[in-house]
Image (cartoon, rainbow, N blue to C red; front, side, top):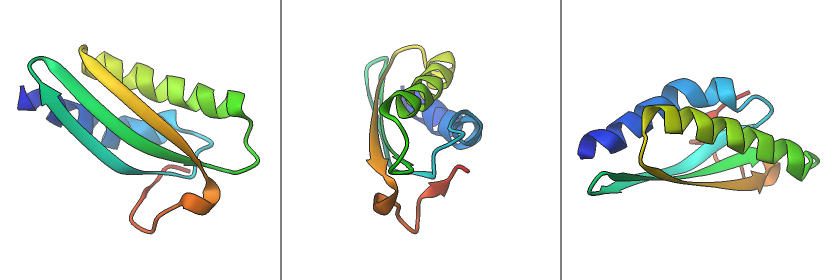
Length: 93
């Protein structure tokens, strides 16, 4: 089942920039698996002035994309304001 984690990472790397339009970056990606379940944890940095509703829409698009690739996934997306960006983050704008 390590393939589930690898599939999730591949989907995040290839699909997140397209699906996360409006976000600044993604960082602190963690994945794991137990049986057929894959676990994905990701911090998404958005502009501080962005509405909660718009940030939630971005998270929904990312989740939908990941669920297409990894059927049994527990996905946790943490939204953070722009001042939490990290130099090693994946720039998505």
